[in-house]
Image (cartoon, rainbow, N blue to C red; front, side):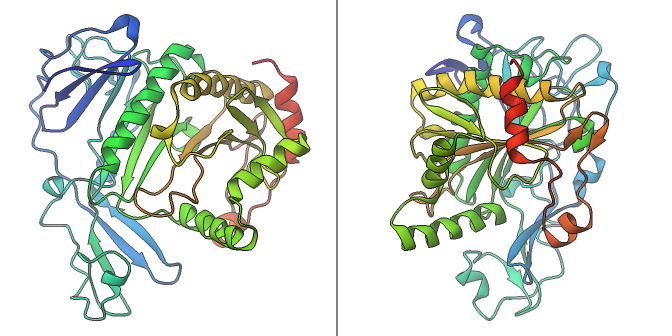
Length: 393
């Protein structure tokens, strides 16, 4: 495999010792030839035991991936698997240094057919589907007991995105140039995962902080290629479809327009992007970042939109960090259109939210949120927006 230049970045593909793919994304000023770097670890072939089961009560697919119980959990800093390799410590990244790296997760929720353990996937709880339910729901390869159990292999893709080789850094400490490289990695891998026949939706995200449940402290995110359209996306698209039928307009565009006209919850903006606290925010600190024109996904952004995204992303994240004199556990979630359906209804946007509600205090998902899905937010959205506007980024 040869290195290539993709727009802003230099990309070098590689293969890890167990057959998983890895890609180096280098900043323009630090591009280097990494083709001769070899993973020296004696790893067995990659194998996963993942299935998806259908919850008939909620109409949702649930992934079952028992092999993830053995994944690496909060290792000491000198044994971090996301740091560059060095003498005495061979990590997931064979190079001694890097800018941005993307590689297949060693403990994936979804995996390619060749990586699924034939002894465990699909699981043994299903029976032939004689009702045609799987065919009607787009899961023709499923097995299941009619009107009872339905499951299929958890085919898809899960990748890790390392934002920097600096173990003690954070996304907010990156330079705009580095964030731009991360954006190009998201774009390239979103396109690659969308081309996998079994993948229905691509999701780029970051979990930050032990309070969120992060098991590796090195600054990193993930990309999922789901074998179904996720419940949250399906619900939003249903709302958008209803809105379009009633008004002839795009729901997301109308939400953005309403926030711009109100101005009360706007946090930051530039020529191509607007960041605002949503009117019905669920989280103590929650910001949605929209491009000012409707596009379905990250690959659809222009060069200028990507450049301005790097700047406003850092601005918003740093404002969120300065609201409380405390750590900022957060989730950054990119909402992209499904690969094959409803792309005209969807509207790319980033959802940034934190469970930090006050210094030393977290917002826990207790009975109402976890059991009923009915959120109760202790922080007035307008107050959260005001506080983020007043701090300097």
